[in-house]
Length: 479
Image 1 (tube, helix red, strand yellow):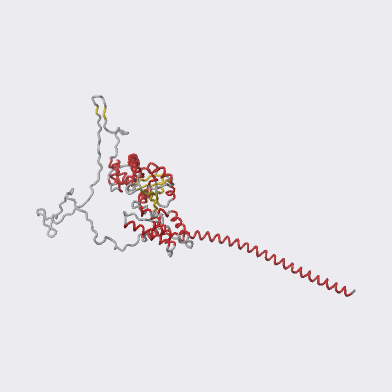
Image 2 (cartoon, helix red, strand yellow):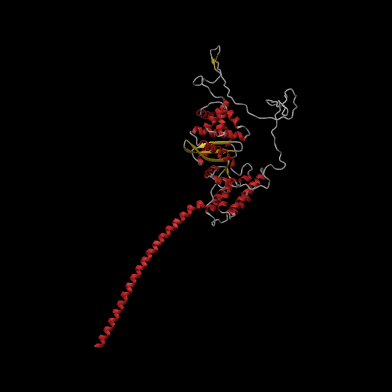
């Protein structure tokens, strides 16, 4: 019996030991679980902080990119020179897309110089001789002079206005008819009007030379001794708008019948609101007009079905490719500038330089053979080889431009197959640049009528210039 009690006591002791051991393990397990939960919470907090830091890092890198990448200017983008800071303008003037020539600077050897020729019948002759001897002071008025040499001087006479009085007479026929072969009397009866030369010069200086009315008023009073108000100057330009309508209609009809037309558009502020100035131009014609928007609808409303018979020379603005033109030619000057920007971003890469070389070689070939039809297939093959290259390791701007070139691939080398198509749209940009000069000087147009008058008269003046005629003579013809 005692042995059984001893065994029972021993077993009980072992159970108690096991129980205490399990209790200790359970306590340790709770501590470990608390530690794990605390560490898990800390890890979750760290993960949240890491996500936040990664997000902040991405945002900071994105903001930093615009400071790291080279600035865009008129040499590597479509930004106009007027929006460049002074530093960028200085750098651009020392860097050009045009390759350096092997020829020396200045006039070339064998170049025939030009000298202004003397007129045979001068308007005025002046005899110049000494009146007294420079040595002894003796009177030389009775000494006959010997001709030494002859020179001619070009000068302007002092400008004075001509006041012309016009008297109008009516004649009564025996039949009783009262004849007046002149315009009806102006309001006010005896009002003074300005003649055609003053009106033509005022229009020429305002439109062609882009002078604002305040400076124009000062010029007339200072140089011509004619006092004229700014309101009268504005009215003169507006009156010329009505006189220009037949000429503008003729230019528009001729452009509609043209096979190759260059287009461009630019912002135009009128009475504080943004409008758009459009240009349609050929080698001999310029038509600038104002539109409400920048979309394809503006051209479709203006030119209608004639667009189907045109080859449009444009930049890569999407509106031009939404129009059913006969064909398109994109401006390679724009494309070369876009590629130059990639060269500025990454100076070690060769892809952009290779594309530039291809485009320049095509332009050079056209310049050497201005009248020949050059097949474009081999040029497209070379371009496709460059477009197949993987640019994923480069910055995103490379693939963006590559995709843009792929979209307009069929419109890059059309100028090779048709000598009448230019390789760039520089003529359109030059034609519309006058508007930007006017706006930079005068701010904006105060009314739609004033804006339309400037567009119409600039169209006529630029068309005259393209045809070797004086813009002033063209405006005089309107008067």
